[in-house]
Length: 143
Image (cartoon, rainbow, N blue to C red; front, side, top):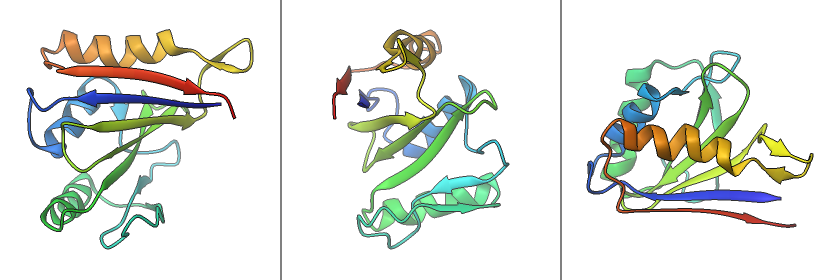
């Protein structure tokens, strides 16, 4: 199964960095359970060569700033409240943020994505922090 959530946060901010900060406020952290940051490096050019490094938050935001300046896709894995559940946030801008729900995906009946959990811990929490979403969509595809 593959699950995706697509968000348009452009009414809230045009900055991916602002969106990452609000995700951190609602419980999605930039560090994996081992304390490392997983991200797409500068010059990745859609190869999806994810890096996993012990870098600071400011170093990550510097990378994001450079990628935005070069019109590259931003990619950061986020992990929920120091747990193992994660999402891959990928975006060129804030009008189409794709969240790939693949990292230790919460499921029901051992197969289907627990969409209500992701909806509650992403969409509802963003709305509760006054993030105006112009649109949101959640999808699941069977392999």
